[in-house]
Length: 74
View 1 (cartoon, rainbow, N blue to C red):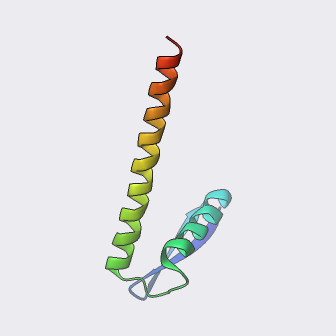
View 2 (cartoon, rainbow, N blue to C red):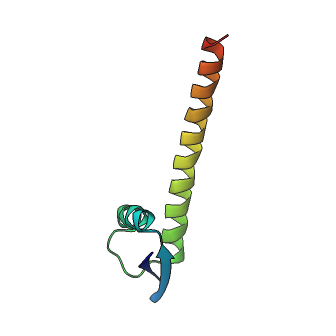
């Protein structure tokens, strides 16, 4: 387990994460928020909505692939 520190409105929060996930999350946080250490609520909400949209698109693509596979195996 590794600790990751995330700052929101000047307050630092530490979370313990599996090693691989910590590295993944840290890269994504840097992509979404940059190196800014004062993340406000609006910035975090926008990053969350962006990630949810990415998950929505991925979920739709997976369902489309699954549907195509089912149709091709009939």
